[in-house]
Image 1 (cartoon, rainbow, N blue to C red):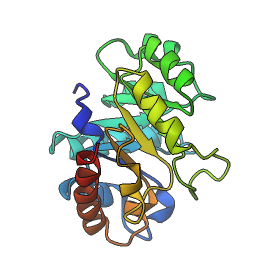
Image 2: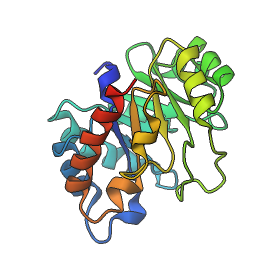
Image 3: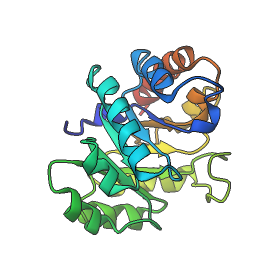
Image 4: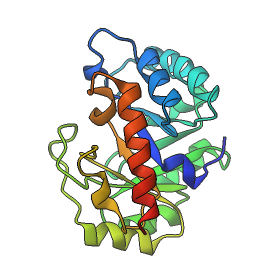
Length: 214
């Protein structure tokens, strides 16, 4: 599955700590059915075999809805599970190495906190940029906050789409209007809400409104 910029409209990133007795498969399916356009499986501390097994299950679900599955950081798990791509951070894996490992057919996302980082990622073969943290976030407490000015600068500096991430929820997503992003990546706003389907549905409507206000 190739990347379409519309795939980034509402990008859900998983986090098991919010499950509260439900399964990741159940919560992801609820979110995707309600309008999530891309899913990233982010499980940094899961054993390799368990991660591959979960990725295959999640992949089978999201592909029924024509939604891509991205694996966070773990290239080998992405390859072993037939995921659609991998997302790497600045401190994790070199983007050019990631592109070399996954080949030309898989999607490569790269995190960037400055326009210069984004440009370098694009040169190294990134298909999209994850820019953030745009708001304060409980998921990454050590993340530097990205200003609106720099977010806009990142979007203007590259020809590939940019998805904003970090603390995005129903109350602040509209503040991204006019930045040039192709969408919003959310974690707790969906998976910690207690109703993944309802939250995803509301966020999709807001994301579409935000994208209209260029």
